[in-house]
Image (cartoon, rainbow, N blue to C red; front, side, top):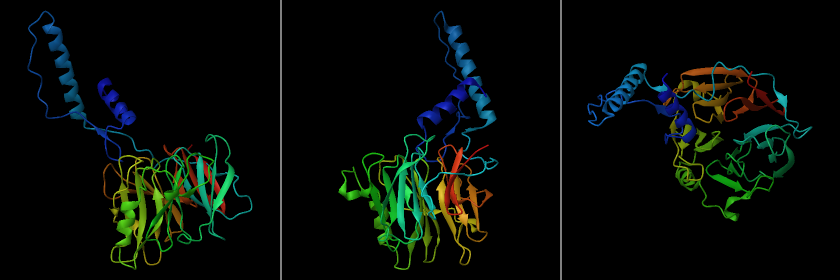
Length: 329
């Protein structure tokens, strides 16, 4: 790869040159003609040489094809044994969400439906200062989701036909219902309008937000088209657009009474973590760039409600009633 192409690829990663939530594709125009202009001044030969070199570089890049930014999660990655996070000792816990910066975590105790959350100063130390709120008015047994900085929490209202936002001003503060705070906007208004218009027998389940807060996935339950739905936005501070059908394929839809429950989404939205009730195992579905369906599926065994961190170097999950994290080897 030429130095100019490498610079362009790295620059796209750093600056976000695509408006899509999936990785950007950086490429030169393979149909570009060589620059035929030649300067007539004393340095004309030098300018012509630079132009010719750049045009040759463009042709080399075109012949090599587009440079694809590597996926955040590698299907062939190996992970070590899970290490307990040491939270809620003696409780049976189910993981709900880990914030993008790994400094806020949320979980549910299924025995009472209480939602727990805790913060830490950096992701190399233990969580502390556990807080709770009563989830009895929310959809029973449903996970909650976190925005990237851990300041906004999403939950499904009772009946699964509306999303409730809880928010706070800073890590360590208590979460409260978002309308009580001075937020710029309630970003789920369009989603809630869509959910309210659904037929009475339909609802959402397994609400999941991607690692950088730009993609939201949920399971559509009931009706004529059950399956996965997804919404994408360009910035974490703007409204969510309406949900649309996502990954409509046999491996990811309900099979009889066995659901495929989404639990996590990579930062580039190309790896969907889910629990397959048909096989009672955690799996990851991998998507090519902009592909509407997954092409690779990897079984991850006993990871319950697994979620990756931003670069997939760690995966958080629950097993045996405990909350754990596994590091990539």
